[in-house]
Amino acid sequence: MEKVNLAQKFALFNEHWSPRIVGEVQDMHVKLVKLKGEFVWHLHEHEDEMFFVVRGPLLIKFRDRDVWLDEGEFLIIPRGIEHLPVAEEEVQVMLFEPKGTLNTGNVQGERTVADLERI
Image 1 (cartoon, helix red, strand yellow):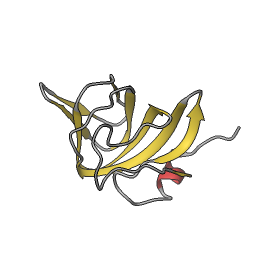
Image 2 (spheres, helix red, strand yellow):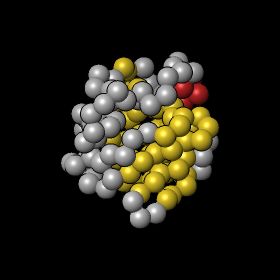
Image 3 (tube, rainbow, N blue to C red):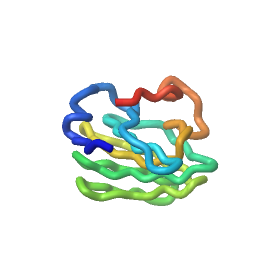
Image 4 (tube, rainbow, N blue to C red):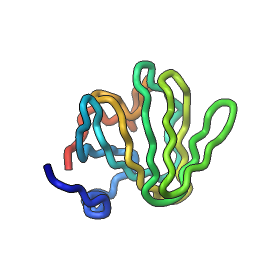
């Protein structure tokens, strides 16, 4: 049982769209990720996910609307909802997702990270 300093953990990596595991709660992973640019449209068929913005503004696009998240805000995206994260500048995000959740959900491609590093 050790405390986690988010600034220290975010300083350990520079890659964008490549989540790192920083903890576990029950059957959930707590992940940190840096985002910049536009991701890919995707959905998670069986998993809800929570985006908590630590630093910077994040846009989450849905097919019917857009949601802006600022520092200190979070959004829970229910399973089966297609979404597209967009970060005009670098954004630091904490994710809460069931273990085994792929970052690209139902889409496999160059941005898919199957084996997550634990930091």
